[in-house]
Length: 470
Image 1 (cartoon, rainbow, N blue to C red):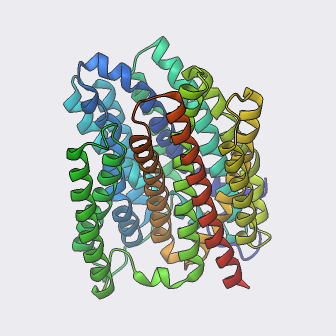
Image 2: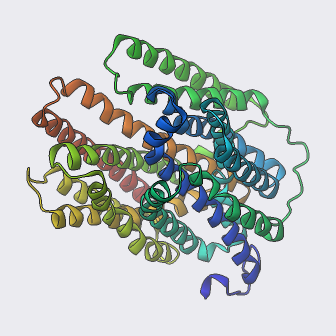
């Protein structure tokens, strides 16, 4: 297989050793994707089993998301200073151990605490996973390995709800966490065996002030978007909460930018954004994930509230999207190794925007095959965009800054998806007063056109990048 073949002048590890690193990184990614997808569908059962109110149960999911978002940049910066190996092994160990803790949690308080710690472990691995792959694979294969990573994530996204439903019906919610333990231990063995050591950078103190400011910034931003996403987002109390969290995010963001511009060794070097290729690729990724976040929240309302499909059928109607990504992503990554990644990702964005427009113009009574076909087009477009764009971000900075680039990539993905979900919640709160099918239909259609607009912004950023690269 070409991924593990060696050529003269290749940087990174020899072919056979790359395989072990890839297995460790992709196993940890698989665990994190499955965990997020399965826990969300188990919230009603967990609420009943632990005898807690729904607002408390929401933190079974939000606790993980919040702690992960707050620590993504911290771990990316730490890995740049002390090496990928100790950060990845720490994160994977913590994720595996707290998975067992979640499975054994006797009450809601313990489960929330375990989920918060699990989010920290997940952030440590996910924030540097692409950077690890870049460090061990030669540049000529970077697009292909990122395409395979996208294939894994898409396939996991499609399979996770089915596996989660099976575990919930056959066993109990505890197995959603216990299932992580064995693959986690195997991934740890591979990580110890294969991920290379890297000596610590001398004279590189850790930027504690920058870490605190970045955690405050990202945590407040996520809390603000989650307040928007609350079912009571139109209430006065929630509105005040949104303003407070947004204000904190704004102040800490200003302080963070001022700090990294003045610090000698900042948490995130501002020079990384001096590259137009990197900045435009990051903006393109942010806009595209906002679009995807909007669509993933809006479509269930369309399928279930407007069309009247069951939750299971709605899940099946989603399947063509990740299938489209899985079909295209490896080939798109391979093409990105031979041709300009910006051209391939821009073409993918165009297909993605067309697919979203087709979803927004679905008739009031659409056949299932019609819905599936339009979703498949979206998946094909997103699969064609994602791995070339990720390659563009990672390859546009020096190899020593791969950890920083990987952390920024994780942040824009997480925040984009959260912001997209929040925008749909705001539209539903504003436009749906009598909770009629007609009002929900209108709100969903506006949301989908908002997703089209966000993908249009991504296209503008991507075309600008193409012009800059000429």
